[in-house]
Image (spheres, rainbow, N blue to C red):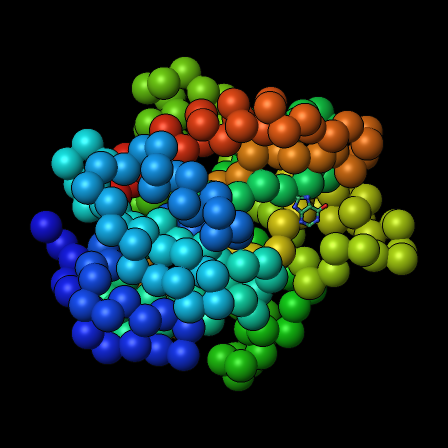
Length: 242
Ligand code: HPA
């Protein structure tokens, strides 16, 4: 077992002695974290309820894993990632979310894997680098996710994504310009997660089911979203062993 009982607290995570695993899955929605714990994990203990950002630790096929909501956007996801790594010893962070497809031929319900994460956020300026930093996924996690996908016969799209601070952009030409650079999809957290993990010596990966297509206007139904999410979870949970 890899977790420690955590007696210390941060402003956002207060485990009160309850365990947090070295691998933490991060859906945006805390109720999604509860769903994952209830559906996939055994021997579950809830370790956080501060601000209703529910976090749980349990086992998946005998390996300890935690799952916690990240909230939406780089500021929220990044502060939880920072605290998990620096205060609670998390080594692997896996964002399991949804994204909008920027490519006509990447359909709703398909899986996008963020090899790299572009951003329109200024978050990475905090590192005061003399150039632009390229936030990338952990090769170990990405490679193992792809091996799981191949073994289970699941098609994925691996490449660049955009982590945007803007959900409602008045400039409707923006998606096409990122798409022209080969960017596959848009979400709101992974570039921050990747930068925090890199700066703190941890591993991170973002994987998404496509909830809508910004080119075709296609959208998903709740029922079909659930099926796609289940497939993605069955590829992500084994990463606790990676
Ligand atoms: N923008 C940002 N995040 C998203 C989107 C989007 O269009 N779809 C799903 N997550």
